[in-house]
Image (cartoon, rainbow, N blue to C red; front, side, top):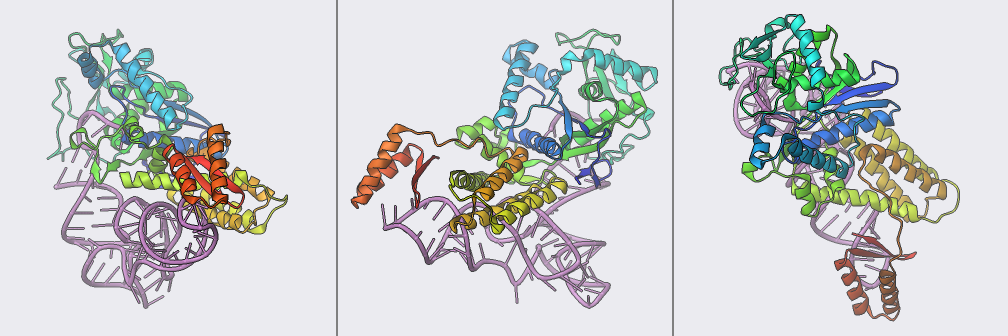
Length: 463
RNA sequence: GGCGGCGUAGCCAAGUGGUAAGGCAGAGGUCUGCAAAACCUUUAUCCGUCGGUUCGAUUCCGACCGCCGCCUCCA
């Protein structure tokens, strides 16, 4: 039984979809004005783990993630770059999707663009206008918070007063109440604009998510995901405009991913601790290692991203892969041994118990590593039989269907040159010419090939 | 100022009203020609500080200290 923390109730609740076996979920996607950074991707990896675990638990998943391709920062940056809106956003959208793929994040079923859903936004605004929830000012359309008494139920913020010390938006747009938010923005000179019954302009940020989520998932759906910073105002506003339009509960579970710190500090360009996926890949860390680090701590606690942590993640991942390699290479008698079979069983139980508890990946991984140690011991003692090896490999594959970090098990491709060198080295070893043997090993290591002498002969793998 | 979260070994980090998972790093050992991989042992008398409740608190309550987030740009 999967339990998830629900921001709306601030409690862990048993998860059950509205429809029997189908989970409809929406995740706030990127605004495509720059490369995504690892903080962004922590959220997307966490959502991916949620999505994969739901599938692991036998649910069908209909997952929608928007691409925000019109927004103030986009307009600013596209001008700076001297590109058209389309050209500019297509570039960063493609880069974003490429990073997603690198990080082994499954592509959501639908990835709608805001600019392709102006009609749906118009419909939503029309409903709100008819319901008396909006007002117009200087060609822009605003949502009136006063018309929605439940406003604030997600964030728990009381906005009546009490904003001393807070920045109050000094917008160029005139609002009746500082808390109101814009649905449709009147165009300023030379800005991209679309024609609607509300006049020319462009959508406010919040509108697109309500319009697109409800289009693809219905007026009420199961899970809405995003970073914690979106709780207010973005998600609060989505609830307001959606529920004001339909009169129905918008979302059952609100799933929020905590922030990533970098070396104990907030990531920012000015601090020089701002990393994109490719920054880290360029520094020699694989995307799987990055993914492993991002998912190794529970999604709902702040994660301190460090380079030591990244190196540690790399070692941890090697350990899992080494076990898989040993199991795959094992040639053993048919049958099964109690110790190994028990380790596999406990790993799966522990993994599921951890994941069921609000996706506690730390606890889930601990159970897996318990089994890693036990299986390695059993392997050392020759107590892993064919059936055990197969079930242990199946266990790793099953767990990795959620974690997505192991990558393909590469078949030991024969590299004639490497093989010849290994043969030469083994001949040298037989003749006890260890200097020559060690030199070959060092040379191969420099070329990224690690040699291991085992009772079954010399094995090699790529670093 | 309002609201929320966190503070566990060198680092990351789980967790519980009954006496501290797991990973990384370090040290010692087994194996090895030497390594690597793997395994074993070892590294928190203690879970920010101080009080309180309790037979018993790291776990509950209060105060304090420190860190982080949100309070209409933001994953």
